[in-house]
Image (cartoon, rainbow, N blue to C red):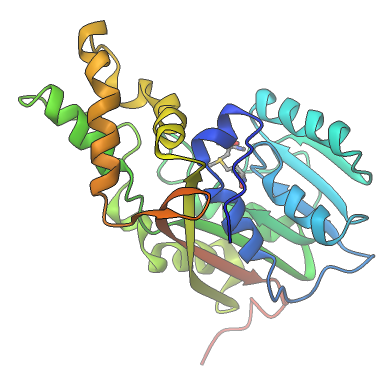
Length: 280
Ligand SMILES: C[S@@+](CC[C@H](N)C(=O)[O-])C[C@H]1O[C@@H](n2cnc3c(N)ncnc32)[C@H](O)[C@@H]1O
């Protein structure tokens, strides 16, 4: 299928559909399914990517979309107005406590690629505990995390080519532990879901209409990798980065554009009400 690459914001250009494709897979074979009585949390919603995917399938679904970035909430609100979505509210919430949301409120709670709070590597269980708290008994939490981010190598190799004697800036680096399925499983188990959990792999892509477009979109994140580089050094970045993207193991040309495959994990936790039983 041709990639849809008409992106409406810098976030969308930078992510190139990679979070949207995960969101779409989170909604497949959802158990329990979304029904007219569902109340859904889109947690760490960014510009409302999960909400968008829900509204495509269930236009009347009742949604609360939250993020702690006012800029992201503004983007979500603009999107709500533009699309004319009804039955959706927004709010500022920290994923680590969701303190403005009451216990036992939601039938479904989605946290798509929002399990990592920058600068706080220990936030995982606090996030899943908060999700457990705000879910109704019978409700389900869907969370996702990265298994790899192949494209980071293109940034690192470009920085190394320009400054061979310097270690590349690694602001986006994650502890390898956090990219394992077992990490996501443990966050759900320890966040009170106990053994009512599942983790499955999911393939996604960052995509653009052409290689030049992909280069320009990804270089919107250049401050994370080339801060302090001189204008002269930055002039070389684009050409080298383009070649490095082509060398990536998962880079491919497809009809209508180019894409880089990535792998993510989707974790599911059901709040069943039997969590306090001691397993024997
Ligand atoms: C990778 S984006 C994912 C956005 C969206 N869920 C999607 O599917 O594209 C991560 C989001 O987490 C938000 N975020 C980071 N730390 C947060 C926190 N402590 N509480 C709430 N949101 C947070 C960011 O503002 C950003 O919108």
